[in-house]
Each structure stands twice: as C-alpha cells, then as structure tokens.
Image 1: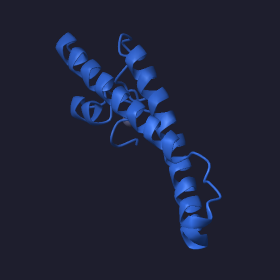
Image 2: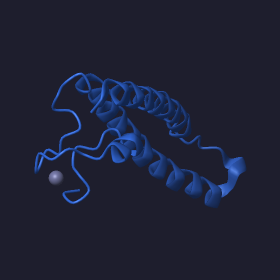
Image 3: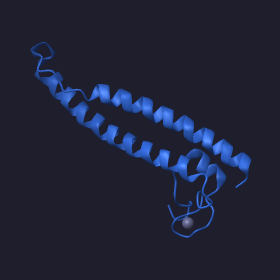
Length: 109
Ligand SMILES: [Zn+2]
C-alpha cells in the first residue's frame, strides 16, 4: 500500500467514524425509555417498545463498528494493516475503501 493510499484510507475511516458517532447519538435518543403515556394508546406503545429493541440492536452494532473503525485507524500505521488475518494476502484497496475495518480478503470473508 502506498503512503497516498494510506492517507486516503485514513480520511475514509475518519469520515466513517464521525458518521457512526452521529448514528450512535441518534440511536441513543431513540432508545430512551418509553414513557407510559396513555395518550399514545396500547398498540402504539407496543410499537414503540418494538422499535426500541430494534434501535438497541442497531446501537450495539454501531458501537462495535465504531470500535473496529478506531482500531483500524490505529492499525493503519502498522504494516499488518490491510492483510487478511486468515490467509495473509493483501486485502484489495477498493475493498478496504468500502469497508476499512475488514480484516479478511474477499475469498476468506
Ligand atoms: Zn484471505
């Protein structure tokens, strides 16, 4: 990987980190406890509770993604970055650009 490619990937990762942080903020707002408000009615309250568990799952995923992205940003200085953890071959640059936290090449993923 050339230094220019590393710079490019770093920018991609930084952008994805801030996007993921924004989604986490949104998910956190949406997973606030559902108010026992009679005015929304029983069915919409159940909807709200269902949505809440969907949002909680999305929040957990986003948090995991954020930590993987931060790890990639740290590892990008390392020569091991961009190598498949299974077969050791280099992960194609375009794949890293699309999913910078990928740790496996296309055939091992
Ligand atoms: Zn591989």
